[in-house]
View 1 (tube, rainbow, N blue to C red):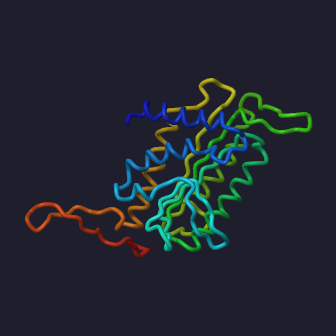
View 2: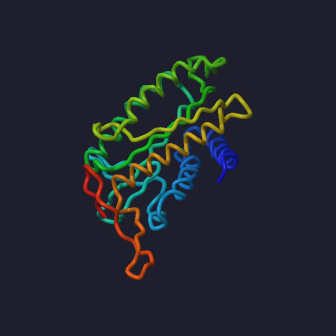
View 3: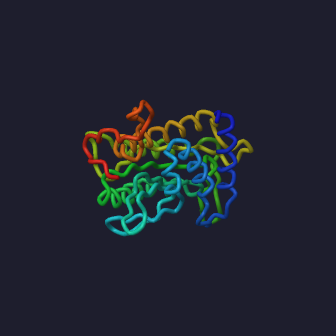
Length: 244
């Protein structure tokens, strides 16, 4: 699918997010569905049924429902392979962004303590038109006054998005994707083509990390005994033993 078509899909999903009820528990679902579709284009067909929204995953502190996840196998022994956390800042930005970073470290650490090989991605939708609640009502930002706040937030995400050898610290994630919108504008998705391209690179990086860490999930083709093709597992990854 070309970038233009993906821009339209993402705009439609974000429009539904911006117009959803403020307290809706499924507010992020349209973006989750967009990501599900893009991930299915990258994952082997036998994993599609195990990829879904609102995935319950055990953690050291407590179970958590992740916005998007690949859990394989399922049943009594659940093994998360790929997890995505979807967040947004659509109001009270000055108080929200530090909490978002703290929450990220906590939720990721809890699952990584039980499943150190899991691949984790983080998606954030940031609104340049996000209002701040005051005693007299909501105050809306003027121009790009939220830019310094969001730059600090993105800087924090960059610091946390470097989980790869030799840095395996708990609380880090493999990659992040930030989507900037401005709800004050009719064309609310900012820099749409570059945003979509960053999203595609984000998903490519997550699937690449999963392939490297769990190669047995990706059947390799090799010549069969009669010159045909058969499925054969690739060699195990360095660091973590692959599990089937």
